[in-house]
Structure formats: structure tokens, C-alpha cells
Amino acid sequence: MVNIQSRNLTSLNGKWRVILDPTGNGDSKQVWQEKQPQNKTDFVEYSFEGGPELQVPGDFNSQMCELTWFEGTVWYKKAFDYKVQEAKRVFLYFGAVNYLADVYLNGEKIGSHEGGFTPFQFEITGKVKDGGNSLIVKVDNRRVKNGLPGLGYDWMNYGGITRDVDIVETNKTYIEDYLIQLKKGSLDTVLGSVRLNGTQAGQNIEIQIPELGISYKTGTNDNGLASIGFSSTFDLWSPESPKLYKVIIKSETDSVTDNIGFRSIEVQENKVLLNKKPIFLKAVNIHEENPYKRARAYSLDDDKLLLNSAKELGCNLVRLAHYPHNENMVKEAEKMGLMVWSEIPVYQHIEFADSVVPRKMENMLQEMIRRDKNRCGVVIWNLSNETYPSTPNRTDALVALTQTCRELDSTRLISHVINTQGYQNNTVDVWNPLYKYSDLVAINEYIGWYLPWQGKPSETKWKLVYPDKPVFVSEFGGEAKYGSNDGPNDVAAYWAEGYQENIYKDQIEMFNTIPNLCGVCPWLLFDYRSLGRMNQMYQNGYNRKGLLSENGEKKKAWYIMNEYYKKK
Ligand code: GCB
Image (tube, rainbow, N blue to C red):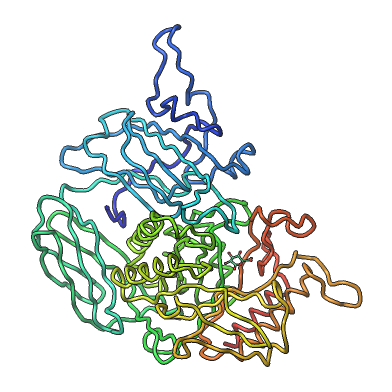
């Protein structure tokens, strides 16, 4: 895999021709061969010519009214010119395609990918031609029973080539990967690695951080791998001072530049410590949707809209739910001083009994970590959300995944989000086998919305199975339609702003009762599209738990949360 950071990219973004294929016939007709009739008696029953065009990147649902609710196959085609350079290797990079992608170049299949939210690439050296080329991508966003996510989820299934497509050129031996982050628990020692790909495996390597006068030299072994370790005095990255340094990674045949920050994140004595100091995580949940465009967010402008609102709310962390968001989102959050919670779509209805599921989870985890492991802003890898019941299949698979995650990256916190805690006699009973393996006890609870309060919020009792771990309320809230007023005599009614506001007031009272509370995270920033939400009066295909409406209007609960964060 090429790390595309700072490389010269040839963008294939723009208009692509498409064939909509709701019947799934394109495979049997072998659409990717792009046969052209040679004479009038040649029968070819497909053609990209004459068909519609779609913008890439972008979800297809928001681009054509025929596709609004579509879950199925769309064939995409891009014709492009290319100049082959003998000395170069060439890769075709996709930021993300939701959900399955089959990729064909000049009539030949070059690969497939499963998973809607992580990047993938194929080497096309020797396959891309001098002059005209034709790239065809079959995109299928149908829900898959043994997919991630599975069949049921509470967000809009935006399909298509939703992120950038680029051609990346490298030298014959190139810097395939690097890790440059502080060692776990250290404020001054960098521990990492550089990996080369190509025939010239043994090379001199230099890491430069000009601002700090660092020029660290090492070399790769016969497998192209070098370990890195050096110390310095860094201006540490934090929400108040999100300092990033220009870092240059050089080999004899390649050079890559990145902007990297240095910080430590750990859990000690029931607390989350950032740079060795306790920090309260003032978070908000965000879906990757531009509410104004009613479309999948992908551009820097989309990302800024979401992140600026999180900042305005008073947050220092964003939970990017429920899948890895686009890379700009993570980079921009880091620049703005927002810590990032990143997660894979292991969400609710996962088919753990199917033996392919653990492999898929691990692939996605690797792809997420691979992309963002140098982003110091990312402080938490979350590996699952609301997986129940606690069957042995589920627990074994997620414990194994946690171990893999620790092997891939031991520097960040790891969590699993649970929502099956008990709640009786005003006592919350927090347990789950996965908490043993998590750094945080992350709880989703919707008291006041899906279930009634059982006593005064300020008198809530807590039974914690791991009293030595920090507790994070990763979701809470309730729905309100902006502008919907309370019932007669000011009695707040379901869906009214006042009702949601009361939930927030009660929740905040309850937060004071939670031992080891290290942060809270309302569900969520903006109202968002979710077709399973069927109350036509108030929801109409929207989950209305936003603190902001889909038009950006602030609901009453926004102000309650904003005040809470100001005081924290
Ligand atoms: C949850 C899920 C979140 C849902 C939310 C809700 O527990 O994690 O994805 O959308 O509840 O609105 O019910």
C-alpha cells in the first residue's frame, strides 16, 4: 500500500458515466468489456454512452432522484489519458467506495474491495497504457448479512464512489509506510518505523524535523524495514495548542512529508490523561453527512461545517460515528484541536456466527489504523458499538480483535461501546465481558427517552464491574423536532424541544453521580437521515436526536449542553 501523503496525485475525480443496474444484469452482460458494435448486425446490449453522469467523489443517492433510496448496483466508467514512465510504479487509489467494489482497467479485473469507509488501492504498473485508458468500477451498496455493518443500522446507506479516486506514481522502491508517534506514556521519545517496498530493500533512512533541528539517521534491513527511536523536547499537541511539526521521511529513492503532532494519551487510576494531565472528554457524536446537502460528507467544506459546530458546542473530542470518516475530517479535527474517536462499523446486528466476519473486522481495523496512525489527534480506536447478545462467538471475536488492535497500535486507548447495562431501582448495573479488555467503560444509555427515569436523576446509583476504569457516556439524548413546542400547561411532550431539553438537564444531574466519569458524548450534533425513523409528523426519515436541526437551527438542548461544557 502506498501512503498517499504528500505525493503527486493525478485525480480521477469529476464526472463519471454510469449505468444503473437494479436487476444486477451487468455481470452476465460483462459490462466491463465495453464491447462496441463493429457493424449493424453486432448485438451489444449495454452502453455507457448516452447514459447519465455522476460526480465522483459523491454518494449516488443524493445525485439523481431515481437513486434516492437505491440499494443496488451502479456501474461507473472513467476514460482517462496517461503517459507511462518506465521508471515509475503506478497505483490506483480509492478513498472509499460503499460497499462492494469490483475494479476493471481496460477490460481486465484488477481487484475487489469490501467495506464502505476505508481506502484501498491496486498496483496498475504494466496495466495502465500509454494514451487512452478506461476504468470501470462496479459499485454495490446492498446490505450484506455478514457485512460490516450488517443488515440493520440507523443511518442512511449512501452508496457510490464516495471519496477521492487518484493515480499515484512512485519510484521502483518507495516508502510504503511509516509510523512516527510518541512511545506510550512518553512525552519526549518517538518510537516508530519506516517500511520500503521494492527491490532496493536496504537503504539509508533519514527523519528530519527542521523546526526542532532533528535529523535522525537509520537504515532499512533486507526486508525494507527500519525501526525509529529518538528523543526531543516537543511542544506537545493538545486541544489548547494543536501543534503539528513538518516531518520529512527520506530514503535514497523516495521522500514523504507529513505534518505530525506529538502527545501522550493513557488511562491511569480511573482517569484519562492527555500529556500526563487528567482531561474531561467534552465530546459529541457526528455522522458523516452534510445536513444542508442531505448527502454523504466528503469535502473539506463539509468537514468544516461539522467540526466548527462541534467546536462551537464547546467540545474537545469528536466521536466519528459509526465508521471511519474521510481522511480530511480527521486531519482537520487534529488541526482544530479536536481529539478524535475513530471506529469501525461493527454495529448492532453483526453476524458473528459467520466465520468470515472476524477476518472482515480485522481487515477494516487494519485499514483504519493504517490510514490514521500518524494522526496524533486520534486518541481512541473504538472496535464495536452495541453488539449483543453476549454470545461466545461475539465475545471471542471481539476479544481477539482487541488483541490485534493492541499489536497494531499500543499507543492509543481502545474501547467497546455497550448498551446492555441493567437499570433497576434507580441503579445502573454496568457490566460486560468486553469491558475487561477496554481502556474505557463506554456506555450508551437513553434514560429519559427509550426508558423512563426510575427515581431522581441526582440519586442514581452505580454498580461498576470495573471500578478501576474511567467511565465515558458515549451516547445519551432524545429526539425533538426543531420548533416543536411543549403541550398545554407547558407540559413537555415527546418530540418537543422542551422534552429533549429536560432529558439533557436530567442527564447532567445524573452525570454527577457517575464514579470515574471521564467524559460525555451526546447523540448527536445534527439531525440526520435514517429511513427507519417513521413518525411522519416529527421524523419523516430523520433521526431527530440532533442538538441542531438539519438546517443548523439550535434546539433548546444545545444551550444546556453548551453551558455544561463551558463549566467543565
Ligand atoms: C444507539 C446507536 C445509534 C442510534 C441511537 C438512536 O444506541 O448507537 O447509532 O442511532 O442509538 O438514535 O437510537
